[in-house]
Image (tube, rainbow, N blue to C red):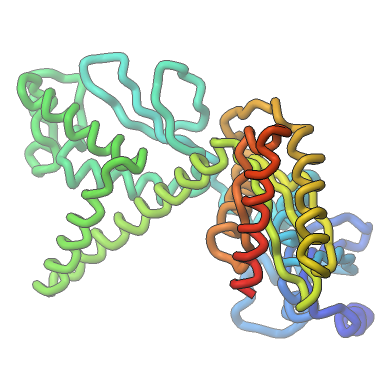
Length: 360
């Protein structure tokens, strides 16, 4: 009864909640756009509750919460706290598969594509990291089957493999011209993963439609699942590429009619966040400009390293926020921080403010 009463007094605002056991140990961290509604759902009897949720409820003896101004900050804070605390129920509820990479080995006469756990071969080409091993396997299998490069014994020359007899291998296992064609088709897969050539997606979509019209729903479903898996991979690569440019980003997010929040973001981190009143435009402009110059000048010489597995979750949150929310942002080029480019920086900030007002 104590906990249910405590829930009643929760605010209906964004934040993070921390579930505790009888020893006061934090066993689960979650985020919410509406804290009261989200936490209250744990105390309602529902057939939709999984066994893990039921076990969590049985261990739950108390909870704390941290308020945030925006849902975006709740997502970021949850990500940070889970990484630091590693609560037992977050580990239980997480996909058990660790992060993985797609590796293209190019040290022989043919290119080999495989899944690996570490990007530890400097001469190989890597994509990732990816969280879902199932999606990666499904995407690779679909592409390899489509291009008929799914050879089951590529090291045995002059001997056709089993997949060749099934029509899934173009015959690279026998060497000769088929091996040249194999490498050309592998280059198409690489170009797709790099986002340079997405024509395969249109072809597969058309194949899916044709299969459906012929009532071949098994084939249509296979194309659909492959397309979904490929789109998942490409979206992750967009996140990595966007973050990989080490952009300096200024974001304005609305809080109320008269208040806004300014975020300054670089790589996968929020470097600065503060709430301000939207008074006269010149005052707002001055606030944003001073913050940009102070914060981003301090990181002007920071180099970028490839995202680690621990950093990819935060990068995904930032990317999704920028691309899908009602925030307004601009990318600050390095040269705009120099005194000689003050007028151009002013122009970028005014553009940010005007876009913000239009979106409001």
